[in-house]
Image 1 (tube, rainbow, N blue to C red):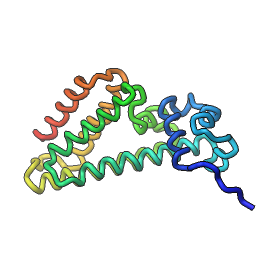
Image 2 (image 1 turned 60 degrees about the vertical axis):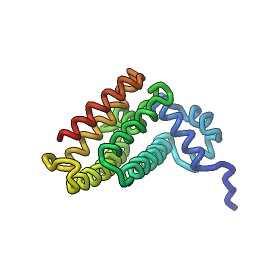
Image 3 (image 1 turned 45 degrees about the vertical axis):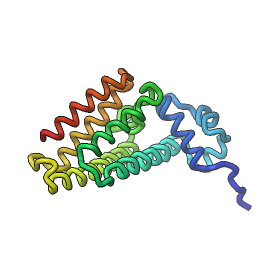
Length: 195
């Protein structure tokens, strides 16, 4: 007879995500995950598999959360300039929660494992394609409504915005200073408005 799980899987995965986010994949041991998630190694393995499987599940969970945040902001019926400003402000707030030490989990994954681990690379590519499509859709609407010129293709503009957002994550690790990050964001936003 199957035993009932005595832990919340989503909460456990969130805790594992936090450990990976703080330490990275390579530096995290299964013991770190057990302590951080608050469950035994047998429960961890039975539910998620090995360390890499847990990491992939944590990355997927983070991707879903980040994608939902982007979608919610971009779906609001406000001028593009205000939506993008909010997106950058939200990103800066998130990055500075811990003085920028953790950075962006997706960016960290790209730096540590992207290109080396095919499953991680596939997840990251799908994630950045999703974020790019969300941004491109909103940028295309702004172009159609006359808020933004049609000089550049919406997807190319989306990639430029993404580069600005994820560059903030890298910058925040080294310079966890709100003023600097806000000024960098303002430059990116200004460039989009002039595009």
